[in-house]
Length: 54
Image (tube, rainbow, N blue to C red; front, side, top):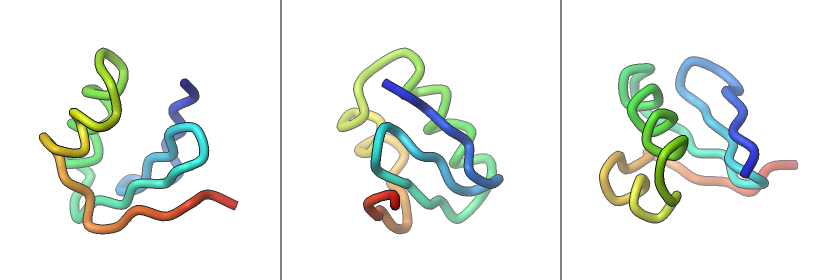
């Protein structure tokens, strides 16, 4: 699973970009996906939007 920090509030995991309202929320999500699965992290740290990466 590839995790890329696109901006302070955007993280791409594989081919999906998750957008958060704060860098703190993005940090927490990024740390979460490093140790467990994405669906769990989305439930724990809900993004404000999700989009398919280009």
